[in-house]
Image (cartoon, rainbow, N blue to C red; front, side, top):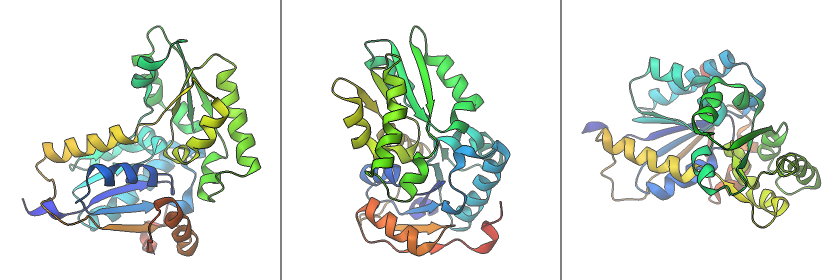
Length: 270
């Protein structure tokens, strides 16, 4: 089909979705990918649902202008707030994120699962439905983590303030008996080492990046739009934020040289 060689579009409120991009790149090495860091408007976690919907539609419009064949919402908050609206507007495959509650249930021994997420994700109807669907005999404790997204956006992954914040949020879950912690925000994956160190031995830490990457592959296959390229896929980065700043951070997270371009002005209106 003609659009097999078209790129996959990915967006996040900032650089956190680079963690998912890494999983998708590993799963789909020949696909071209466009990534948008909407850093000018990060974090989404403290924004109203309608605002997040507007940003998600604006970013989707830009990606469609780049002829993407699928859109991945690399943000739990945007998935919860906007993916239903997006799917009602667009016909191409749209893949979102949700906290890995189901695998957590299979791993917990104490029956108590903790979820680290943004306030907007926790307050969303989608999150409520998710936890009610899978909770059964397990207790699910959601912990909002204000400030952590901003830490990742500044590449402050290991400083004392970050450690103190993670200690507070993880400690709140451990104090209630959680033996399994779900990372409910793509930004938090870059704090995995700190989270695991504070949580200690015997505590499971779960993210859904690899599962989402496999779902992207499945949806491309289902729609018969897998790339026929035999070469390594190309990566294109765009941002609504400061390009120099975001380029430096993405290069550190992505561990490859990157060139980040500015989104056109018409897509900067919320």
